Length: 129
Image 1 (tube, helix red, strand yellow):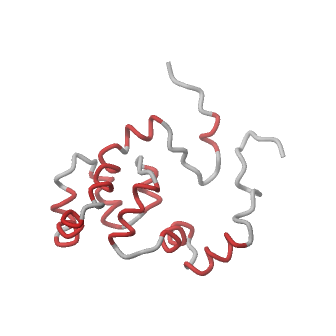
Image 2: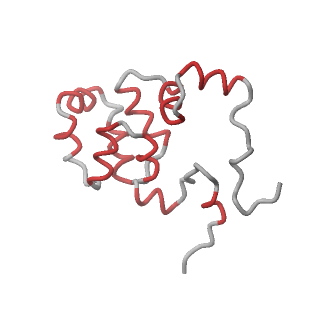
Image 3: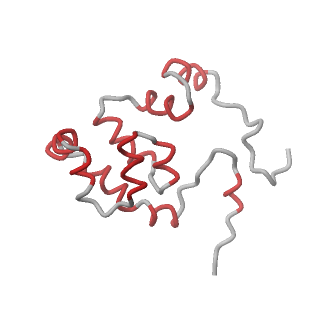
């Protein structure tokens, strides 16, 4: 029996639920492996070879190689795990978030300081205003 998921119609939002957790399990485990210096070094030396050690889908591997974090999230990645990729690349979380929104780090920081993005156009499609 499929669960009713009314939260799936929030524009631009992927909710990390149990289904997404299962889909992204190996992707997220790969990310967690980057917490060890020796694994970061191996990944940086040959990204594809290191990724091929993980039973991730080809789409997941390509998303990592492209550093397409939005695609990684669509494929089950959790942003808190994906942050390990950014850290491996020497990126701050603000730099990563900016890249995911099409903004520079400075633009992203300014938006957040001003209270974040507007809810207009970002509500659940079936939600009343």
